[in-house]
Length: 371
Ligand SMILES: Cc1cc2nc3c(=O)[nH]c(=O)nc-3n(C[C@H](O)[C@H](O)[C@H](O)COP(=O)(O)OP(=O)(O)OC[C@H]3O[C@@H](n4cnc5c(N)ncnc54)[C@H](O)[C@@H]3O)c2cc1C
Image 1: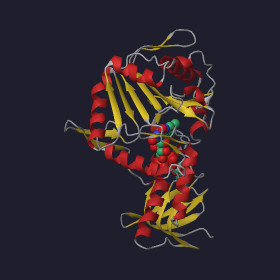
Image 2: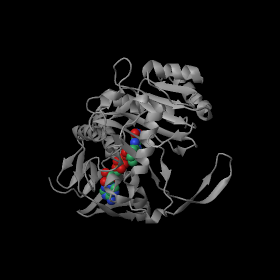
Image 3: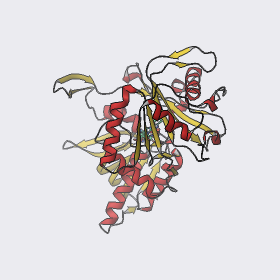
Image 4: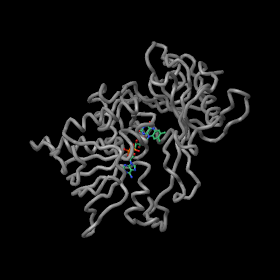
């Protein structure tokens, strides 16, 4: 099929957002009795990506699926999204093992609010409060549980995790089945505009005229913002009603994740089942599992789950803000391929010590990790 020069919907980015948009546009057309057109030169739903399917954040994410976000607006949205994961667990490589938010007193009220909102919309979860009851609940699941400073446990029985790349390929299959076309190895280099709107997208393979453009480029979004000549700062009205002016439009955050090379079965529950995703936040001091030195006495957090693909335990820690000027942050090469973003010994040390802080079975595990 020739390179298309026209599209009704042109979606840039073949990650979870771009492919989900393509799939749902295809479903919407089908619901109207239409089949997306796919001819030489013209196509109705076209996804383009400079790399391949899942070559951005969607292909390296831990894949945790949860309904645990502090913004109340997320509650129903996440319940809806979890329903989509459940609708075809096999195609999405989705594991409904549940998710646990295990928290210190400083987070108790916020997590209680999440639990309340989940209950109100019938999203199934168990909320345990108090230090002794939290410990008893965790020990009933893992007899070696030992995390300190915990006063609440929110156990979502829906949610869990999906294998990242497999999930995105599953989504691509669904988008294509509705008639969408996916073209990889096509880099967007600019836009043509007219009458105050984008009329066409310039790529390294030619210009594509588009009636509608969806920019779903994840961490590359600043490049697109700059291509469109949009402002570097914004004015934002705060919750206090005050206007905050000249706020930088972009800042970058880095999220570190790793894999501990152990038998994934090591993390099975007392009942021999695969465990839920475990997310622990605590303000109890974290000491090194190697030499006993203090790693932090500030609030810290980790999450982890078995990963049968890597053959180990996979997870991460809290993200941190990059202090580099956003104009100087190189997003490419992306993720583990970037020498700037490969996790080092410090992360491995912290993460393995944190695992041992939570469960005795991880004590003394040599940090063999991938980022
Ligand atoms: C380490 C890590 C762990 C995470 N863990 C989780 C998690 O457990 N659960 C969760 O819900 N979220 C998680 N996230 C967040 C989640 O991964 C992202 O929010 C999500 O994947 C973003 O998807 P996207 O489709 O918007 O972008 P991406 O998946 O990044 O896709 C963007 C695509 O745009 C393409 N592109 C960029 N520039 C161009 C161009 N010029 N021309 C053409 N194509 C272009 C890229 O090649 C890429 O394929 C994690 C993120 C990271 C980094």
